[in-house]
Length: 181
Image (tube, rainbow, N blue to C red; front, side):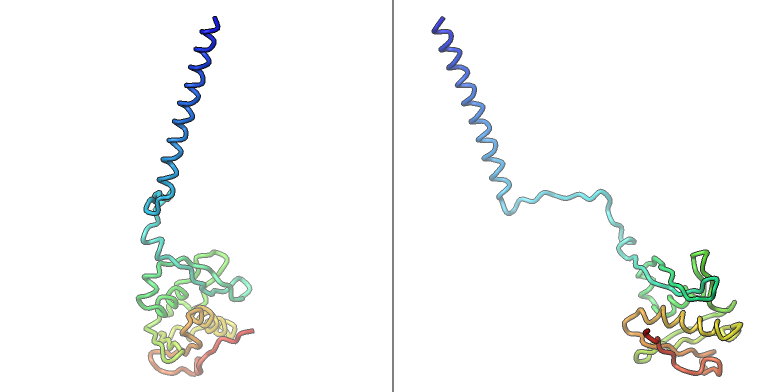
């Protein structure tokens, strides 16, 4: 009976030693792979970012609310479109009007932008004659400030000048600067 107890105890100790050796060897191999400087685990994002998403940017476009106050509307646009002809693109978005139902267009109907160019820090905007069909001085003020607030977001722009059919206009006869309050 004593021999059976000793044999059982020896087998039990031998099993413990084997299990311990197995755990030590396994952990030793794990440490080797973790400390290897050339070993990297690959990260797989849940969703790949498309090239279209990478090109998106937000711009602020200025329209009027129901009380004729200028309000910004954030617009998510493709920056590739913006890079083609920045000033024309932004002004044409203003002419097209807001996407938000609580805001209204600033420009008179059928206003068309013929083109734009940067001279120094001033963007010269050439419009069709319809831009002169504003109702009152408040609408004129809102047209000018909508353009100023939108275009002076660009670092290179400090002012705008409005021409009608490539000529100066009595109604828009000066270079307009954004007044920082």
